[in-house]
Length: 119
Figure (cartoon, rainbow, N blue to C red):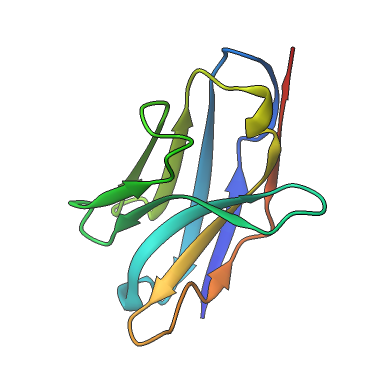
């Protein structure tokens, strides 16, 4: 089992920054990669960013490239998402997720943290 708890969401004006944090616990040695996803009401959950266990490989959705940065601290078992130059369309609930070795996809999810970008 892996437990994920997100924090750091809130309200920010367009152009501002927020930093989300995901505290992970449990069988983290089984986790291949961690990711951030987001969802707005009525829409499917969408990929935002991912980082491998070693931290040597990252990937981003085109919509956030150059603005968001994902990084992890294995010593602290945290994965963070630095979000800069926020846009109104970044408003969503953000979820942290873990992808275990052998799984067919991200199989552990946090409860989500809300980000509201206002004009």
